[in-house]
Length: 384
Image (cartoon, rainbow, N blue to C red):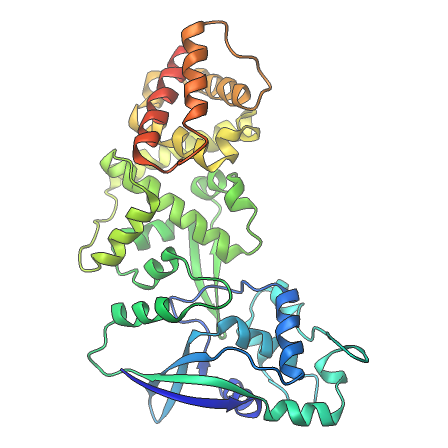
């Protein structure tokens, strides 16, 4: 692995974008995560000639030329593309839309920046400012990879150097190493991956899994569909592994196991496993549609949802109660947690609910607390 320290002028970068020589979507990169406000601040600094952090590119031979894959600096280069756009004759990224498939990102193109003489888009800048801007240099570190460098080493390097902007998460790394058949199968339950020009987008499926997971506030609150799919993917993977082993694990330990043991694959779900897991999500989707369960924190809160679904899996509650009885019990418990219904008069049941609430506040992913919550949940549902 060789490193070369250099600089790239804006002129050169624009040519590379027009030739599609820079790939902004290698598998371990995140989606479009910067707000327009952050992008404006960056470009204001660049137009004013202030330095910005280096970008890291790894060089890959493709046919008779090299292409460059972004390791660190994706959000900065995306901001540059959106700012320049194609509204000037003298400097333009003609096919900038190829890097942004969704309307939300495209509508932020040609954003203005605040300068001493007011707000200006790139098309409105004076020729003298554009002339200097074209000469602006960005520190660049090019990494050349030899044939014996593994994806593991490349991702390890990516984690080491990814220190600016929005930090990469462990799940982003797991996705990059997603050779595991179970990991891919869980994604396929949720979405379809599509390549649109230089952009990669996820199209969410309409099924029981997505309908139930969309109710979780930590998922619903994410602004971008790719981010929502990623969060669903991570949560459903956790549920599937519990379904298979009936053992609680910390989310971080689950993901670490995929990174540290990339050669050990988890088998795909068998047909009986897929049917049984699907029946649990089907039950919840119907319950959400036909009762007030979807309005309670059992559906919306990540901790309570995890406890509810692992209890449905671990204790076979669907077999122990009729559909209507079980839905009624879940709604009643959810409304007690929300403060809509009063605590039951039964002292033992009230104590169990209070204990459940205590272990739902701190260290919620701790294995022992997850086990205790599940035990109390099953006890409470059975007693209501």
